[in-house]
Figure (tube, one colour):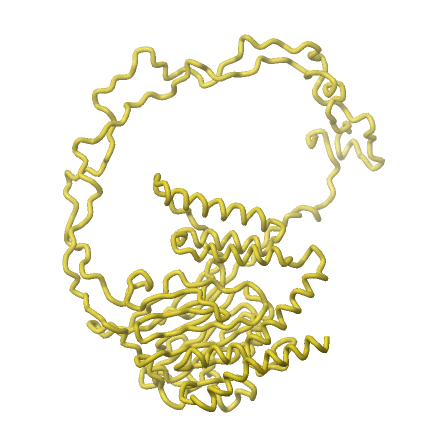
Length: 540
C-alpha cells in the first residue's frame, strides 16, 4: 500500500512539473483557469432569473479532497456566470476550451455543457443570465432519451443577413456512461480545424468551413432548387409499369385455396378416438368455503389426459392440411420497363441569392463563461475550467488535476465491481460492451440509425441481463450495412424511430432544455389486490 502511495506521488510530480514550467515561463498561454479551490461566492454570479431555482454549492468530489462547483438538486434549472478580465479573441492563433465534470449519481437526463458568452453589449447581464443570453460557443455533454452527445455549437453571424445562426457539429462523440470524472477539450486551430477530445483522446476532427462537418454549413450552397420550378403534369417517374399486353392464362384459377386436405394422410395406429384431450383433475377437491348458491355448481379443474401422452393422439381425428399445388393467388400483369420513364423529377438549380464566401469563421469574442443547464440528476460536479492558447497547457492541467482523480476513481470502481453481487451492478465486461456500442453508434455512416441504436443501448443499460442480446443485434445491423456498402444492393430503408419519452424544446438560442418525463409505469400485477373470486367452470 505504501509503495502504491509513493508511486502516485511520483506520477503526480511528473504531471505537475510541466504545468509549473508553463505557469512560470509562459503565463500568457493561460487566459482563464478556475479550479474552485476557493468558494465561488463573490467571483461567480448566480442568475437571479426566477426560472433558475437550482442551488449551486462548493463541495468536494466524492472520495477526494478536490473541490468543485456542485449541482445539488434534481429537476432544476441552473444558471451561473463568471466574467473574464478581458474578452478573448477566437480569431487569432489556437484557442483551447477545457473542463472536467463528474456525474457522481450518474446522468440519465440532463445537460453539463458550458456556454462561452459574448460581451454584455450583445444584450445580457450576469444577474439576468438565462437561455437567451447570446453566446459564441456552446460545448459539453448532454444526455437525455435519444440525445447523447458532446455538443459543439458555434453561433455565427451571417455576413449577408446579419442574423446569428447556430451551427451544430455533425456526428459528435457520445457521453461516457459511468460515474467517473471526465475531461472535455475543444481545440480551435487558426487553419479552421476543430478537434474534440474526451479524456485527452481525440474523438472528433472537423473543419469549420466544411458542409460535411456542420449543420447547417457556415457557407451556404452556391446553388439551390428553384422554388418556382414545378413538375410537368406529364412527367412519369415510374421505372416499371404493368405489361399492358399481358393476358391472364386460361387455366389461372384465382379462387383456388392456398391449402387443401391431405387425402393421402392415414390415421395413426393407436389413435384414441373416444378419449378426450383433457379430463377432470382427480386430485382436485371442492374448497370447504365453496357456496353452491353463490358460486354455482363446483366442477374440478381440467388437466391433460394422461392416456393421450402415451398414444399418437386423442379425440376426433382429422386429415391434416397441405399446400394446394393448384394455388396461384391473384393474377397481376408482369412488370416491364416504362418506355415513358423520365427519372425522379427535381427542380432545376439556380444561383443561391444568400451565398457568400468565407475564408475563416467570424468568431465573436468570449467575455464570460456561463453554465445554464436543466437536469433531472443532482451530483454533477464541474471543475478545472480552462481557456488557453496552447494545447500543452491543457494537457498539463489534465495530467495534474483530472488524471489522478480519474485513476483513483477507476481503481475504486474496479474494487466495487469485484465485490458486487451479480444483481444490481454492471460487471466490468458489460461496461466494455456498452463502451463499444457507443463507439459503434458514432460511426458516421450509421447516422440514420443512431437514434435507434441509442434507444437499444438505453434499454440495455437499465436491464444488464439483455446486454449480450442487444450487442448481437447492433453488431448484426452494423455488419449488414458494411456488406451492402461493399457489395451493393438495395438501399437500406431508414428505421422508424420511436418518439422519445422526453422532449427537448429549444428556445431562440436553441439550447434551453424544457424536458418533461412521463414516468407512468404499467402495473404488471394489476388485479392482484382485487377481491378474491372462486374459480368456476368457465375459468377452466
